[in-house]
Length: 114
Image (cartoon, rainbow, N blue to C red):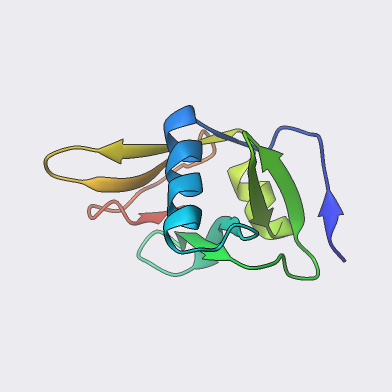
């Protein structure tokens, strides 16, 4: 069942929120939200998942942050509580970056966390 919460689980920076809104507008998906979470995989146990989705899944928590709907499952909430999602756009990289205070290990490639 979809739940909503006012507890601060993850935070979007202004830059990240603006990028999500621009992507939703560009792809003509104004009612969609941002799926954020972790999935099993990678050399450090988990990998981040970030995608646009039309609707939350049955057990998701829906977070409203700076005008963006964020969909998260309970396992991801436990692992990501207190995280900040930023958007980086540099000469070498562009994309969403998750700053997670709960991460104990990362792999050399930077795509897997534990």
